[in-house]
Length: 154
Image 1 (cartoon, helix red, strand yellow):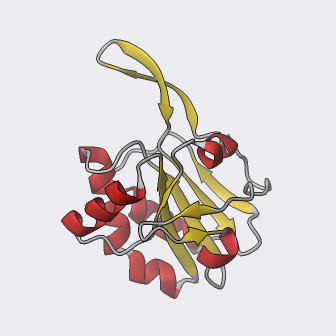
Image 2: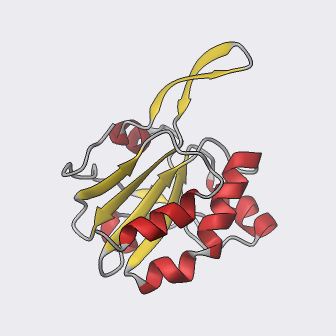
């Protein structure tokens, strides 16, 4: 997984509208909060996305955009946003290239089964893509608020 001081891998991925986006397209004055999540419309991912949406104006006032990233399709992201009235951009990475570049792909366990998948993690990066803070093994509920609080010390 990327560490503080690392550079975010270069990327060009479609958002929920199908428009290709790069870091330059997404960052605000101070940077971006990029969070990886396993799947649209699942309980934990919905909680996390709704909480980031709830605090989105505060993130933007602090100069940061919030962007979600998963392997889900553009169409799935579009439906997820519409269903839950989300206000943040969601990137589609169907081949998991950026997800793997972040180190947010690995072994997971659920109901006695072990498999490879997206690890819930968050990366705070500056406007040039330098990683300022990493949150590995995120618990969805309350995470957005914690990241927002931590931005005051960055």
